[in-house]
Length: 74
View 1 (cartoon, rainbow, N blue to C red):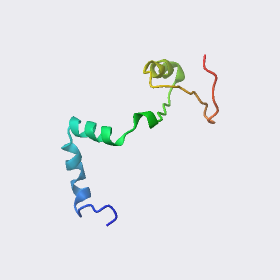
View 2: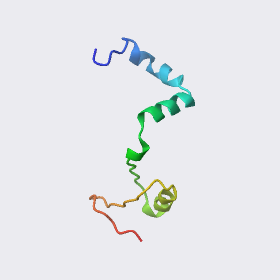
View 3: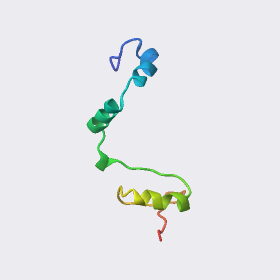
View 4: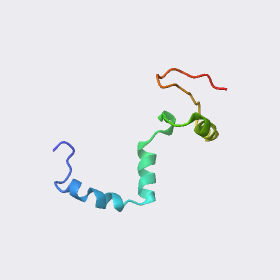
């Protein structure tokens, strides 16, 4: 068994997830995620989403086209 999970793990998975609290998820996120190392990819109508994404202040925003080439921003 590669991950040392009990035999009934997947049959009980939905039940286990349903029991999680906001505190459980928050604690796991604090333990496992490094916000300064995250990359967000947002896909959508640039005219609708760009200003809202920039307003979040998460850092540098790079706009690319469908071929992955940088697009000039106004």
